[in-house]
Length: 97
Image (tube, rainbow, N blue to C red; front, side):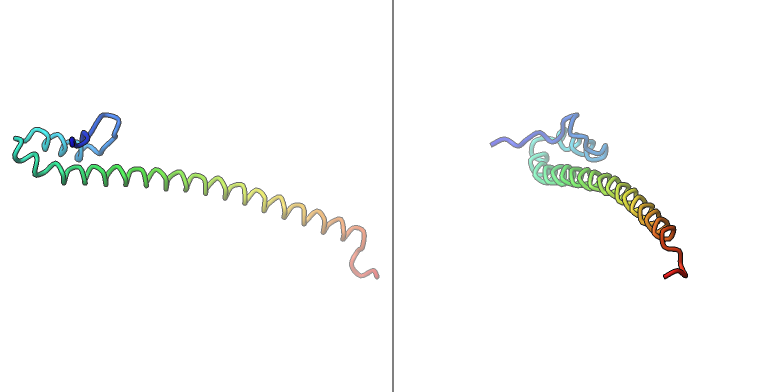
């Protein structure tokens, strides 16, 4: 069973992790075999963190957009309320019954 490649250009690993993977890959076979399993774990966790970070950034962007819509809706509702109150006050001035 062969292990997957540690890094490809599209993986977008941080430079220090990619450098470490390259250094481990250039070691003699006996040392490399000891370190590759650990290196795969580091690479996998780095990729997982990157995916999680991207998901969090997308969620924050969506939250910002949703907040803008909510603020717009709140302001529109307040304007409508104020307009209705002004219309009601015009029809029934205070002090008159």
